[in-house]
Amino acid sequence: MAEGNRFTSGVVPPKTRIDPAWWFVFREDDLLVAPESSQTRVPYLLDVAELKLPILSKHYVGCLGGRDCYAVEVAKVTAAPEGMTFEGLRQVYGVIDEDLFWVAGRAAQIIHWDRTNQYCSRCGARTKIHSTERAKECPQCGLLHFPRLDPAIIVLVERGSEMLLARSRRFSTAMYSVLAGFVEPGETLEEAVVREVYEETGIGVKNIRYFMSQSWPFPHSLMLGFTATYASGEITMGDGENIDAGWFTTDNFPSLPGKMSIARKLIDWFLEKQRKANVSGPRSN
Ligand SMILES: [Zn+2]
Image 1 (cartoon, protein in one colour):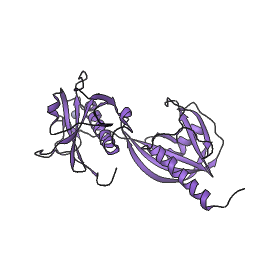
Image 2 (cartoon, protein in one colour; image 1 turned 135 degrees about the horizontal axis):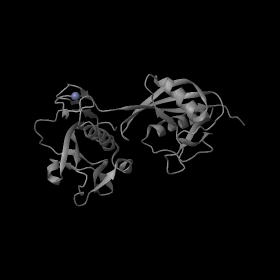
Image 3 (tube, rainbow, N blue to C red; image 1 turned 90 degrees about the vertical axis):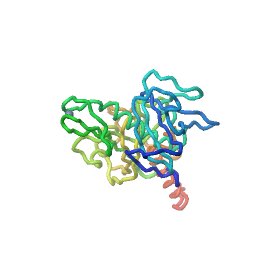
């Protein structure tokens, strides 16, 4: 997030609104966007009611750079207002302003949580929104339903000047990325790193270090980034989610994930480290 555009999370909306707010309006998983000049944006209005849409729910999300942000869910059959369109979050990734994208990701997760927790999972009663916490409360048995987060590790494995990248079945293009996978119940993050790399490629790793984290709203993952170094083994493809894997250097580069992703931040970190080593290190030839 850019400096000056700090986001402050909030649950209770301001009592009065005298300035316009950002409205993150979702029709199922699609976000309402308004093309304005060349940059696609989300509606910035005093009230979403101005758009005359069939609203199912409305949630205060927080404040971005002094501006209030709301998540709104509209009915499935809603047509976009004139000059606007509903687009998948993945389609607006890299298109709308980066700060707005991450707030849209928060908004999408709040809408998804609200939609999938209409009834108590213990007693079946209809839940209601908690007045001060991001929770849905069962009026019958008192169970609280919080937004779900799925922790997943993502790891760059290095071996000297090479890094381990794989091509997922899910990628529509010939893109390669670092390895990632969900954390299992009872597992530490470090254990998840070791298991995931071994399951996907047959490679053993050591020196596991925390890198950074990133929310990934597809639909509610928290990506926990690590770096690790090669310890043992040869690449063997399992029948997991990848169809190819290999050791890559700056000389044999594949197509890479988008700039905003934590996967790319890990790869760029490695490339920068290599660049510095090549500048300052001894020449090998
Ligand atoms: Zn209940």
